[in-house]
Image 1 (cartoon, helix red, strand yellow):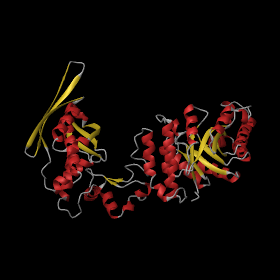
Image 2: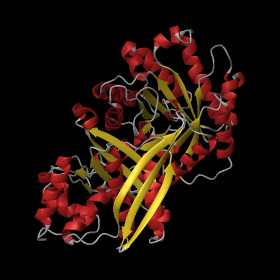
Image 3: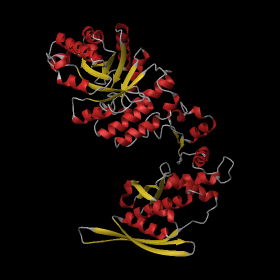
Image 4: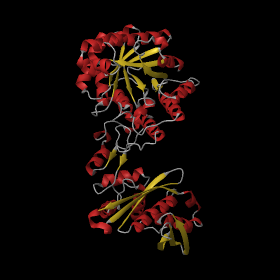
Length: 521
């Protein structure tokens, strides 16, 4: 499929300039392979003249076979008053052995005169000489016109002459860069349209997100003729980031009817977004358009009722087209449809005609009023619904009593928990130590259950969060504890609420272990 718009990914170069983003060579190779499998047309690997890591990346990349993507090395035009063939940075671009070389040059006379401190004429020569030299080496050359829009607004004639210098020297693409990220979509559209009308080579767009218009500006450029969009996965990048390709790609495909990738590839978009966040050690933005966990989450009772009847009445697209899914949230705003759809999503047999539905809804709202929150504690919600549907079934185990204490020498303390747990007619008394009271309580509870339920040994607590409710009541405030657990195959969340943080923690722990024992049923 020949795309109408080509995607140029610079996550591995421009993206790494974002605060808190750092990739090893191995990380970069894994991300590049994921992008290639997705079908991205160009992958910019880095600047081989800037650091040993990028040099190593290109050495490794040259040994691999890429199915879809062309790997690009990034650099600058030659230095002033130096032949391109003698410029060490330009030579490194050749030595990277990539089919594509992307170079940036100056559009804005302010930069020409005050930053690189040369003449307008020499800047044009720097652009043309470098492009011509790279073309003589058989490279696909992409010329990134730095500060294209600011430069054009300052001096349209000179800005255009820089772009023409690249074109006439043989550049395959002239890409207009909103380097400061401060342009409006109307400005981007107007200037891109002018460039498109005056250049014979292909025109692309590279935007930044400083005023939250990175994606909008890229789309505005495409609308008037740009055939390449540069950006990063999840919008990584310097300052507030780059154009977010995760938003651009489906918008081009589904909203602007521009062929970019096969439909099967778009179904892996959410996976791609999450994968790059995971490699970058970033928490995935649950509100990110298209791919976030909350993107197709419905909470208000009237909304959920409508979604249950006609899904697209509150969803602009079928979430599965981008690999996402619909989520129904349950809270004090819930209606019957929330409960029914959520229960069905969790595998429980519940319909609008189930007699217990009214009692379940009332219980949920009562619990939310007490401080419970089930959006991140679906396992606790399953247990609540099951308890009402099965009319208070006998529990697999109960905690008869517990005691938590701390002993130490004033500088280092150890917590100890005593738990009496009942399974059927058997009572087990266990004692465990831990780094803190919850850790000790968790250990004692597990020890008391292991001899009855072998699968308990596979369950691990992976996250523990505490939220103080109504903090104006001081130390007597209610505490909400959210716990995330896993058995290595599945993850689930549970919740407990009490004025006593230990008791709240115990409630969440009990729910976690009970769910682990019941989920196969």
